[in-house]
Length: 259
Image 1 (cartoon, rainbow, N blue to C red):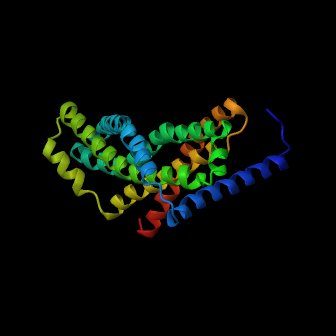
Image 2: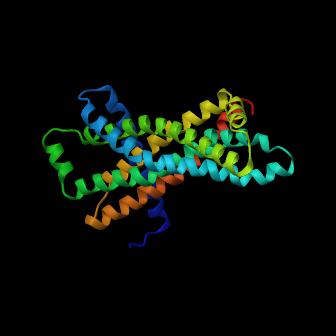
Image 3: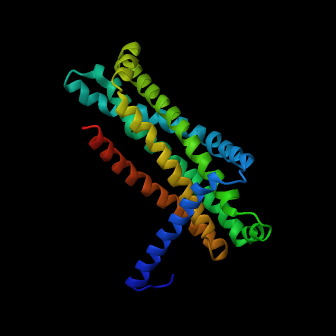
């Protein structure tokens, strides 16, 4: 690994941010000019959305169940076990549902995009596309960004539902909470701010996952080792950004809505 001075390292990071900003901006601007690759977008939506469905359902279900199980003892001490539906519902819709779904999608899709595009770079397939007059941004990046944003929105809704259902099953079978009461309190506690926050986050997370994955993919250098590094960096960076953006979006929403 090459050693860099602090100044060179800082310049390298600034350049990386600049290059990523260009990739992200071009992925959006390409939406407003032809050609539009609807076939590629549909194919990516199938790979990203339906391919991620099993892990999203499983992680959402067991996350909701674990949340109910861990909070039940505390609620029992205050005689408030009937409020467990509210706790699980708010926790899943506002925070855990979007974040867990985003992290699962980042681990599966951001790394996949980086490895796929990185392999195309090192085998000079992207250079061949440019030589044939095809814009790699329009053909490769924009369909992945659109598909990820679109599918992560619905994957988060599915994760929320199965998370609340998992919490309900644990509450009913392990702690004797009435099933109908659980669901009644679970949906009645939700207000516009909760739903808005829970559905705004996956849009941002999807954009982060796709643009980070594509950026590291098309920036891969150094043969197969470079592709491996790009894959790891895409997953780690997108996961960190998801958690950071989650914090700031939550804080901003609370400020705007006065809570």
